[in-house]
Image (cartoon, rainbow, N blue to C red):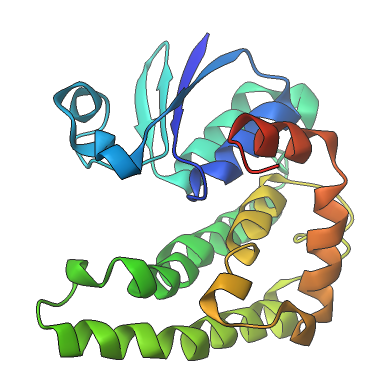
Length: 207
């Protein structure tokens, strides 16, 4: 049995979807950011970073979305959530997910987490003003260069789709019109129809 720690609206949704797609046996634990539960002593024992997602496995605790997605795919091979037998295809998936983690997520975080990088209100406000531009640039790259279609990596669904869907859901709130990225927009609509996505959204109170 796995124990999965999440907060609604966070990047944890990607792993939540993957767990559902895999048919994994897991218990979900909501971490209330509004109550600052991510900094509670109990949660810091799970993840000293004070962030979600976190996944407690029989071997130990995993954090960071790309690592968790790969773990879920590798431990549930029947679900075929990653190209495990193709080193190049697997590396491409890792590159895609790494871009979402290192670039897209960071660009988005400048809107609500500016205090991680700056102290003055002026600097934080400047970062916030930049978010629509940087997020649009991120998704222009995804639309034009990274996205294969109909799924992120091509014909086969993978954990990259759960991650892309999660991050793309942030666009409108970041002041970016999804319609300017037709491939991403179609992917969002297609993903919304998947039972695993609907189950994860329901579990997080997002649907």
